[in-house]
Length: 311
Image (cartoon, rainbow, N blue to C red; front, side, top):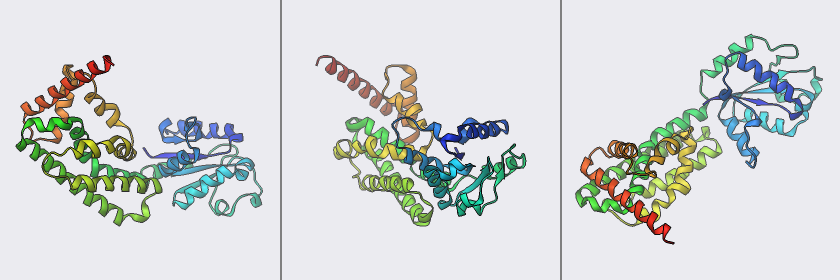
């Protein structure tokens, strides 16, 4: 979700709190406001901040002597300006013009020394209606890879069980999967060529991870091969999934879909959800074949549990 980024010095936490309160009073929700209390312990602060700025449609700089002298604040607003983001300097105390860096001094500031003007709300609302470029590209990438992602996961989950449903069905499933991978590959390559200057570093890295794996998926044979579960599916968790989740944004796949495939498949509700997902992404597969795959998988899961308990 697009958000506002607040740049402030830690010594001015009271000013930051004042600004956050004002935003909330003017209909900006908690998840639309980002400042560094969102960074969890142990995370790389620069990566977290860079990502947060990339996902913001504007930056509000709390201007005080402390923030003007802070190298962290300077990094934040300078990076935002470099990305072409709208940056609003908010004056929270009287400052000597000499202490304000030229890039900030050249911008029209908002005087918040007494109270933040109500007209500022309208400015922010106008920007709020236009998603940042990073959101636009993330949505485009997600739309390109979503179907391939779901098929990639399900085929890996099925694994060698695909051989049990007969050559004709397994071949049709693989043909559909390979064609979808080829289509996604072409669309990803085109997107990068047409928007090269608009990508940020993290987007670019994740896109090339997806493209590299898509190239290999697009070259699969139309018959089942052990190279898929033994090599390509191993890359799903370690490489593909982190890249997919970056563009996905809200984690729905891992939280709401993937989990059903690993819970007790004898449970009717879980089985229905898994059945519905396979039927949706492989519409040519017959119901009896889907049930066979699920039953085989359930049997193998129970077998694995018995083996584990006997260790």
